[in-house]
Length: 367
Image (cartoon, rainbow, N blue to C red; front, side, top):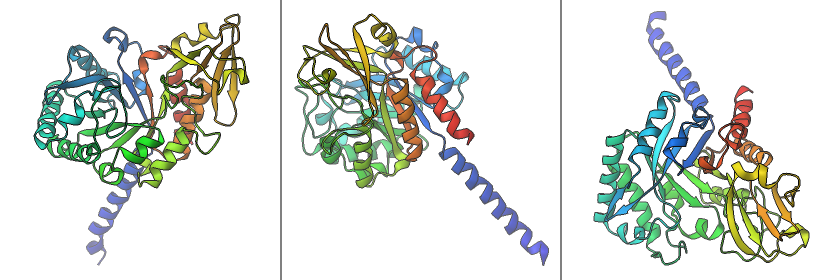
């Protein structure tokens, strides 16, 4: 009688152990880096602290994905797996200003299939792990002059289906999504798309963009009023649209945005101004050092820093180490897939913003 139940019991034990292992694996926070910097500098970063790295950007050439002069970069990214065997390498399509013909190409089955086959070819040639779609944007207004159509919403769904049916079984399919209300409301058929893709990279930055004539927090964690765009607002909207929390990756900014001609009222926050330029995190220390003219402030409601220079009337909005720690902990507490950032090339080689993400992740995993 005992012998009769030995096999079933051992099988049950096998299942329990494997479910536990899978569960533990799923709890690991994804740390996703976009990178568009120099191939020569890539190896200087702490690659061991990443789970995914994304090449930026491939573009459409006809109906196919074309990496241009990116072969060297992609080869170096794949070679980094020697340092970090768990690292996943994806090739991204598009970017801001990089999807001029996406609406047209992806409007036909032929265009979608030809694109999918070209992605498979690149993946097999270079040993990458998948594709990240950075189409900015389906349906809603994106880069000036780029085509868009109400049909983009369904065509995007058909595109991810074509990719899933064409690529090798374990290929990753992700996409970058606008973190603001108009995109979340209109651009994507969330329930259909999220069944197919592995996760969505929410661009919860540039929420006050370079076209804005009023300053604000471009990458706030929380909203100070019901109409303010923020990471938390975007996440809650996605959840209401049926997106599983385990497929949401929130975005952090490894750069700041600066406005000029900003009046000295409320330290420049929520005032009129003219967008001036962006600045990478690696330059913040010098820009904000004592004597620079900038004074740093902390918004305790939205959990984000900002700075104002009364002499030059310049206002700056950005992420810093404190806000990055809070965003990372937010992703953990909300049981999200992870945190991503634009972009690794803006960080210090060590003891930068990536390191802050890693510290929070490590502390959480030790609990």
